[in-house]
Image (cartoon, rainbow over the protein chains, first blue to last red):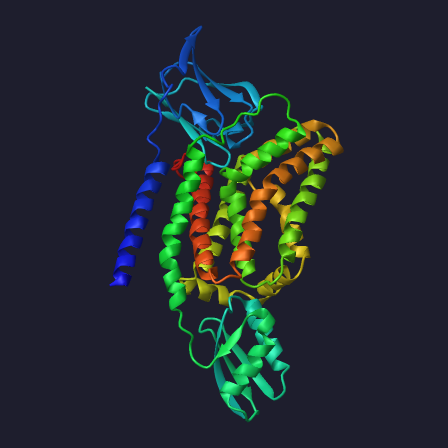
Length: 130
Length: 336
């Protein structure tokens, strides 16, 4: 009887943990600040992404077919997010710990996505072109 | 000539097998010794006339300082399987708490202003609590737990930490002398990360000890490798080298510090930046390694090993996914 009880508790505990796990790691695609992140200056679409303990916003909706610049902003950043890799642009750079780094992106096709990652792959952000 | 079969507990590795075989072979009247790691028994052929019970007691005393004991009957393994009941949820709980810590944003500190040695120290502290822990800490935990199963002294752990501090000081100094900039290709980092992740997962499965298959694979590995591991366990040199090697483990924070050391312009300043950073990580890494050692010599050892196994496998999977995302093989799954 006692064993069954322990078994049930353990099973319930494990299930709960696993659910918490999936919920925590899954990420809901945080788009906070996504609207403010995009602005247009002299016909160039400028996307500002902050890199500190990850990237924010995580998902940016941008316009397809126009010249684009991504501004990576660091604020005393020493974690992995300072080591930026954008595979589709063959771009990799150790961002300075403080300041803004510009990345020029040629006009992108509608529906394409650019993904930026830190070199160890634990942080990422997506720019979706529509 | 008689042949006796004894059961033995605590034989985890090829090194234990060699130790037991060598020790017994030197005993009076012993002609042959065969240790089976898979079945956890020893077959001894001897011309001694005493009964098995007497011999078991006599020979157990030989291994007292190593912690092995010979039994006539197969010892119950009930304790071990029960430990997994608790270790599973406990390990998952630790992982959830770890992720919550990352999600809380507490660790996302910006370090404005010039990089001083004090900031490097603080960055080290933060790094040791962050996702760097997923790789460096996970590896330290798994190696420590694994080694703790076999060693009886603090010595390997002390030399590991000494190696790490001295290695960071020397290599940081070299970076300061070199100066300039160089960029390590991110693919190399990602591949390195994947290798470390796989090592963690294998060690984690080993700690869990539930998959007999893994144990069989291990026992069929070439003997030479285990001779070398045995030296790691007994000696101080190998842990020292591994400590130095942690300089190259993939970790975003370490990389930032190395870039700063490169830019520092002199041996002394590069060295100080790296050693300050390493000192910052010392409390957490010491807690992991010395904690493993302490726990593994208490009666909570089975539970500790299994919990550590669950945690290490979790961190290993995380590091594996991250590494593959870094290579562009899969979409980034996690975003802590």
